[in-house]
Image 1 (cartoon, rainbow, N blue to C red):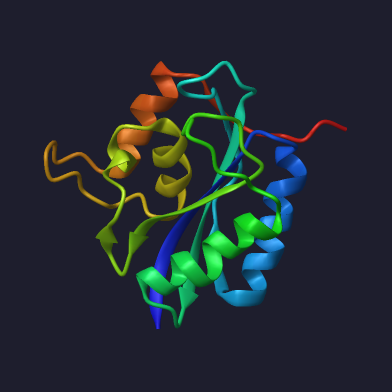
Image 2 (cartoon, helix red, strand yellow):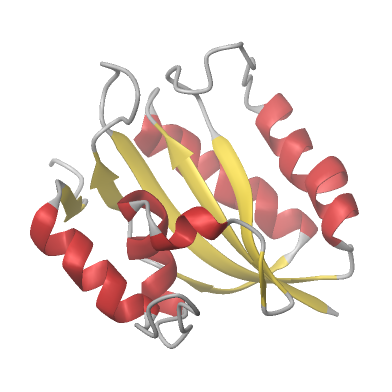
Amino acid sequence: MHQAYILLGSNINPEINIIKAIEILKTRCKIIRASQIWETEAIGSNGPNFLNLAVLIETEFDLAQLKLDVLLIIEQELGRIRTFDKFAPRIIDLDTIIFDNCIIDTSLWTQNFIALPISEIRPDIINPDTNQTLQQTALSFRNSAFATPFHPKG
């Protein structure tokens, strides 16, 4: 079995689409842990704020299969349309950040929307360039950029 840390994000009907994505993901992988949902500003566009959360999953799929046979399929099922603008608003985005203890996306250290949710379920990872833990990195983001735990209205 493999373990993967997956980041889910949405800024088009995010309260609905993140829940739908988790429900579909549960049918294809075992979810071990989940972070709370974080609200962060859109980067690179004037789009609405994003909601993001991270999950730790167990899967029989290798990294390539996980992307092609699970994550991209979930995005398609929920109606994501990819455009040339990588910062465009999106229905759902699922990305593997860590796979079998290998960091796949080094933006983990530089982007609050990745660091904050992942740090809740894997705070002890050490940045090889700074020797800071992910928890320390996430705390600095929380103090310096717009990022807040999301609480549904009503």
